Structure formats: structure tokens, C-alpha cells
Length: 183
Image (tube, rainbow, N blue to C red; front, side, top):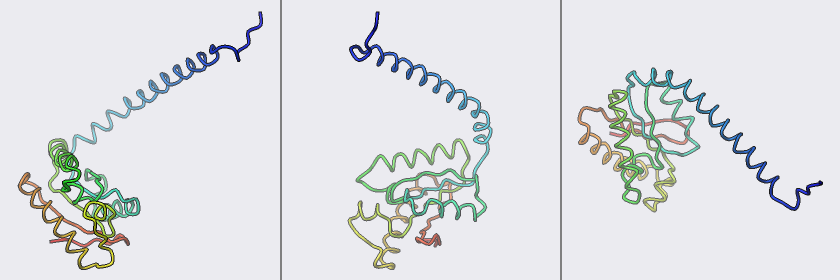
């Protein structure tokens, strides 16, 4: 008896079954890879790191942020949290959960990795500042610095209040990757 696959869904069921089997195997294979990596990850996580870094998600500066931290001798010696707007992201009332998340990360980094300080790195021409504050600051570098300094200062005070045992470093990165400290 000839069976016409166009008239029934048995082919679809077979394909779906094959896909499920593949996905189960892929999941098992992925799980096995995760399990085999777990001891290495736990061994690395057992040590202390110098700092927790909060920076912005801006794709233009991700490599510059890593290069800056590496240049300070902090390669593989810091935890990294990324929020749109960095310091502003942790403070904005428009996204209160972000600040809660940031401070939970600080607590976890202290507990797991014994961090000694929090580094907050904002950057110039930040789109999140435009979104959250409704201001485009890039045309006025002095005002841009002042606004970032105000936000960073507020977050720095909040970090010091919650974690007086941690140092706080406030930075502003330019689009060329150069960094200035904010008092």
C-alpha cells in the first residue's frame, strides 16, 4: 500500500520527533560541557578580586573598557556589571529594579570574591543620559562633565552609605577610550 505523505502529518510528527531527540541530545551535550567546566569556574571563583566595575552597555566602548581595566593590571581581577547609563542606570527612578540589581551584585561580589572597591565608569555621549534625562550633552563638554559628576557623586555616596568598607572610584570615559577621574 502506497502512503502519500502530503495527505497526513506523519512526516511532520517524525520530523518533530527527530528535532526533539536532537534537542535532548544537544541539551545533554551542553550540560555535559557545563558540568565539565564547573570545577574550573568554582576554583576561579573561590579567590578574591580587586573590584566590581559598573559600566555602560554602549557597544562603541566595550573593548576600551576592557583595555582600560587590563592596563590597570586588573585583567581577570574584577567583576563586571553592565547597565545602560552605568551610574545613571543604577540611580534612575525610571528603572528602579536596575539599582536594586546593581546593589545585589555588589553584595554578591563582596560575599563571593571579597571585592575591595567599586569602580563606576560613565562615558561621554551616553544615549542613556539622553533617554533618562532628556538631555543631549555632547555639544557642551563642561556641562556634560558636571552632569556626570553629579550623578556619579550621588551613586558614590549611596555605595559608601551601604558599604562603608568598600572604596569607591568614579570615572568618565571619552569616546577615544581615555579616562578621567571624577572627584
